[in-house]
Length: 70
Image (cartoon, rainbow, N blue to C red; front, side):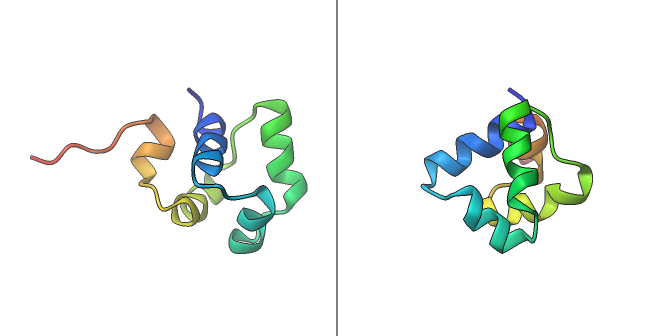
């Protein structure tokens, strides 16, 4: 699963919209729509704010799994 797929999966699971993510993160809705339509991933500049908005870890967003505790 790609980063963008995880983003849109989380949006759906959390009943959040692309518009809400745009307003919260400052990322243009057209940019978010392009990730969805084209299946491309966001640039590194956006990853942190997206993770915060979705309330998920960076590890989950980037690789799909949580960092295990020692």
